[in-house]
Image (tube, rainbow, N blue to C red; front, side, top):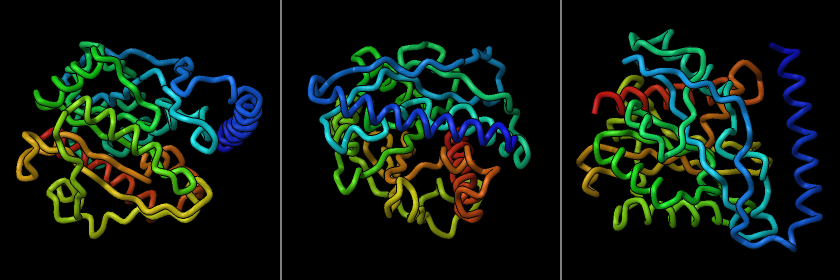
Amino acid sequence: MTGARSKRGTFRAVAGILSLVLLAGGLSARDENWRPAAPEVETPSFPYSGGFTFARIRFEPTIWGGGPFMWGLDLKWNHDYPFAEENFTRIVDEITDIEVRTEGGNVLELSDPRLFEHPWAYLCEPGFWNPTEEEVENLRSYLLKGGFLVIDDFFDIRGYPVQWENFERQMGRLLPGYELVPLTVEHPVFRSFFVLEDINFDIEDARFYPVRGRIYGVFEDNDPSRRLMVAINYNMDIGDFWEWSETTFYPVDVTQKGFKLGVNYLIYGMTH
């Protein structure tokens, strides 16, 4: 694994440099809603089994604005894929009695009817998410029928909340009038399996500048006393903690807490 990791790290570094070079040359000619192709990666399709299969949401990314907001164009729905789900599902298999597929997971577009075979789904990089009307309608139906969605990995970029602004805009389309409610550690989701003492995920070196993690929720009928339908990790990236858990990239305690939070989301989502 060490050799493979080294090669992956080199590839990511080179890809990041190339991405920045291409951006520098072509930024001025692009429309603010320029839509690049979604990353092409191998995505196996696992049949429905009755157990837990990780479901990751695939989408066509949209770029909002320019300048510093364009940073990280190589990181979209497939950020941390497939190592994040592989490591996460192995942890779930090890510490719970859930029947879980540990070879990875399914990658689904929001318009795919197979989404309803998965009670729990994961979407990352919503700062670049701009779903179609069909996708909005299907996801809304999924949530209102009992689905649970984890949204992860988006940040203030050098102090600018452009990713949040796009996410908030798309959530307004998805669930008009619903509030994004800040969650506290007292919410049952943080006690559904592990009892978390805090939900502080502030990381000094994430994205190479300090960030303060916050967790928001969207509730059934817009009522915080009802079922939590969407858990939102802002200025956080628990998928990164899962992906790099076999390395020393993040502190052990933060990595462990990232796994605990993910397991709690899963248990809550499958039991509420």
